[in-house]
Amino acid sequence: MASCGMIEYEDANAEVRAVYDDIMATRKTDWINNFWKSLAHDPVTLRRTWESVKEIMSPGELDALTKEMVYLAVSATNQCGYCIASHTAAARKAGMTDRMLGELLAVVGMANETNRLASGYQVEIDSRFRVLDWGA
Image (cartoon, rainbow, N blue to C red):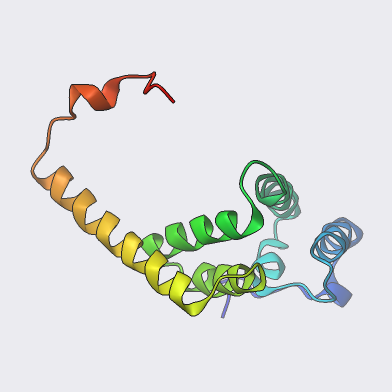
């Protein structure tokens, strides 16, 4: 259960309803998930977070599937069960297969392992990695 409870659409004030309406219109859905209903206790945080998510996750140089898979990878690393569920569903909707999920989680696991090893051993960064122009 959310620490402050959740604000349902019918109980929301006009400011919160406006954000809820934008979420539903943008996502082409008829419901508000529990994350947003929990944030609605602080309408300023709700609006700011929604505006940021909407901007970052909108079409750009990265396609929707890539963005959702990156979000899922970070969520898995941060061990956010809610975000793992939410962004797995979004990634599947964008085309992620079971095999893609397995490969993604293998990369996440390997990155976490090698990150910890490099940090623990305090490995000095190679000078070649510090070059700004990699000839791309």
